Image (cartoon, rainbow, N blue to C red):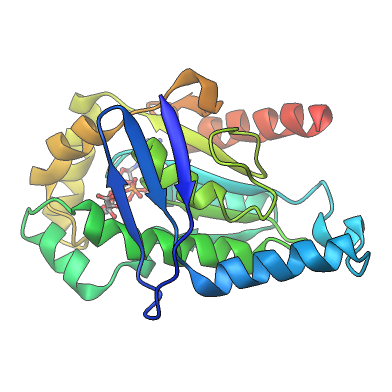
Amino acid sequence: MVTRLVIGFDPQLYNFIHFGKLSRLLVISSVPFLLSKTKMQADRDEGEITSQQCVPPSSSVLVVIMGVAGAGKSTIGRMLSEVVNGEFLDADDFHPPSNKEKMHNGIPLSDEDRLPWLQLLRHALLERSTSGKSVILACSALQEQYREILRSADPNYQLGSFSCRVKFVLLDVSPDMVAARLAARAAQGNHFMSPLLLQSQLDLLRICDAEGVFKVNAALSPRAIVKEIEDWLGRIASHD
Ligand SMILES: Nc1ncnc2c1ncn2[C@@H]1O[C@H](COP(=O)(O)OP(=O)(O)OP(=O)(O)O)[C@@H](O)[C@H]1O
Ligand SMILES: O=C(O)[C@H](O)[C@@H](O)[C@H](O)[C@H](O)CO
């Protein structure tokens, strides 16, 4: 499969992705991002930015806790952020009201709905990526194309390489278990997401092995899940 990156400029900072059958055309047209990337590259070439300024301390991590609605992303992400003394971001807080309304009414989001949201999330990661503080983002990130946008928050990331500061952890959950969790949550009436969307979420979830996504059994207790993620982060840190 061929991946091509086309960089386009758009005065409204509008972003667009088109997925073809045999090739993927990924258009990322975020002017500030490109300008800052170009400037950063130029500054680095001129020796104005030292490697220490570009690369935060190795102890800081950028982790996306991913999976279908109800898998436990917010629960686990919040707990993990406390353990690593990092900042927790919930992708649900970045959705515009129109996206939440759609999901509440049982209408799956389209790529056009998701793209500006993913770009906001990329920007949020990018902004924090040099702070030296760990960031834990809870985000469905169901498709490789969506994860590639989040990976591009790492200014050094090369699309398709999957070698990136932004790491992904999948909360792997059976359809039955997640349906039960969503039903229980809906019964409490304190979440906008309609349980009717579960099948569309399961249908969208695709991960290729080459991506190096760490999969955790989401049926474990939250504490055990967080421990598994911590251990994995320790292992990959020792290889970096
Ligand atoms: N490991 C777990 N064991 C048992 N219950 C869990 C576990 N993780 C989460 N839950 C429960 O499952 C429900 C869904 O969890 P949570 O809201 O964290 O999922 P989510 O993936 O963030 O969902 P969404 O994407 O829809 O916001 C909650 O009621 C939560 O308490
Ligand atoms: O890509 C998506 O379809 C969305 O991110 C959803 O997954 C929801 O935001 C979330 O799960 C709310 O419950």
